[in-house]
Amino acid sequence: MSDTVDTTAGASEGTAPARRPGYGQLLRTPDAWTFLLPGFAARQPFAMLTIGIVLLVQYTSGSYGTAGVVAAVTGVSMALFAPQNGKLADRFGQRAVLLPGVLLHAASVAALTAFALAGAPLWALSVAAVPTGASVPQVGPMVRARWAAVLGGSDDRARLLPTAAAFESVTDEFTFVIGPVLATALCTGVHPAAGLVAEAALTLVGGLLFAAQRRTQPKPARQHGAAGRRSAGDSDGSAGARVSALSVPGVRVLAVVFLGIGSVFGGMQVSLSAFAEEIGNPGANGLLYGVFAAGNMLAGIACGAVAWKIGPRRRLITGYLGLALAASGLWAVHSVPLLAGLGLLVGLFIAPALISGYTLIESLIPAGTRTEAFTWLTGAVALGQAGAVSAAGQLADAHGASAGFVVPLVGTALALATLVALRSRLTPKASGRVVARGMGHRVPVAVD
Image (tube, rainbow, N blue to C red; front, top):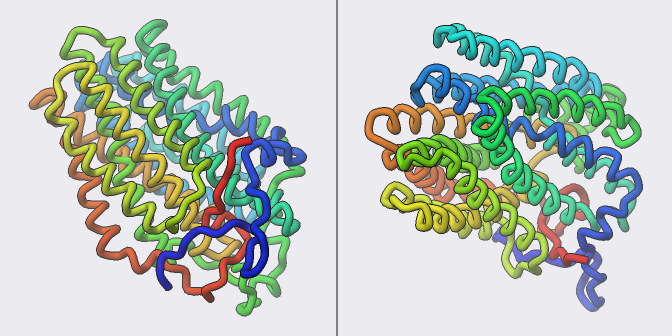
């Protein structure tokens, strides 16, 4: 199957297309705000945790390399455990996973903060980093799964699913605007540990409120019964409730793609911080990263509003090519205005890649593995971020901030090569008909 052109929901040959659903219509969905608001607070850890650790540990140890190792352990732990958390949420329900998870995360962050302030050795900080990363609540994937559950009950509401995919990607980008800037401001303006303290508090309060919204929670897979899980002919994927989403070749390709995106986030966080220290203006770190993240958010909003003429696979390849080219010049820039401008350009290319990847994933996986599939992608971002933080930290310590910017260059180049070579695996093994179920091929979205 070729990469098809996006079509408007409700349109068919010989009929006029239905009015394109917009963000305003999506947000008027009953009960939507009950999980969106607490979910926004609870998903901040993904954006605040790494930079909070880097700034605190660098302050207490004096080394970006040490800070990068601790942040990397946290990211690897999150990447390894996130899909398992998603699988448990699919099977037993989100509330059952979230309640113990947010409590463990708050306690783990408190322990890691105390160890860092006490000057604990690297091995002790690394030990504390393991449960800190493993317990990060996977609220972003859970929110996506709730949209699918809330909107999938009727054909009329199903038209809003692609809009929800775009909206969630915009929310992710907005999180990466607010989270790192907030953490940096707290660490540099209040106390080096303030960023992690705020992260733990937001996780605890937001996670508990999110878990309390039981009405919008997707039905746990175990409630479908063994008979439903054995229904091999079920086209919506309920038969795959026991099959790992990672067994799908396209998911593995997208995981590599998202590893490269994670390398940009991690490399930028460490290298921008090191650059700000080099020029004697630590506060510039928040400004530079905020510009970079703002590019992500603006591009995300635009991607949701454009009526695309090309399919998501081609958009992913095109956007990723732009991302790799933009990231390749970061190491050569040595002034704040130029770095801010190039960082904005890098950010503008990240959102199309993220949105296209999340758009493709729903057409590749069984419905029973939806949350797990999303967590494989977020886990891949975390793993790429972890490796990039560690590598960029070592390079920045040894050769200066410019060397740290080589990490996003290498990460995106390798991921782009993989994407181009294995792009055929991103084609769903289904009939040519576009199925209006789940957040599959994007429908053009208008902003109300």
